Amino acid sequence: MNNKTRFSFDFARFKRAFEAQDVSAWLNFFDEGAEWIEYKHTHPPRAPRRLVGRKEIGDFLGRVTASNVKLTVEGEIVGPDRAAFRVWCELPDGRRIIEQVFIYFTAGRIARQIDVEAWD
Image 1 (spheres, helix red, strand yellow):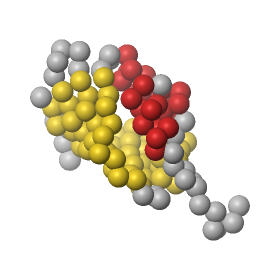
Image 2: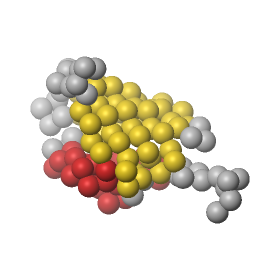
Image 3: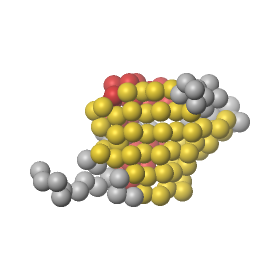
């Protein structure tokens, strides 16, 4: 592969897998060594939650799916090497979480994801 080869990220497919919580399809968008960082009330800036590698990320996505939340992606802005979007999470008890998400691509896969969350 030459250095001029560009990989594209299929955000529409990613969004469908994300909202459907299709763990297999969702996980396929992550690079083998991807890093996922979350900032929220239980993981503030001094100690964010870090998941490293597809195995850890896949285990987490399985827990998300098992938690019976509804996920909605909106407001996406997609560029050639990164994207930003908002996620609404509706919990079974009626509470909601809003997340601002930033993803960075390498060779058409997510190399890093950063979430900033606010909870009801």
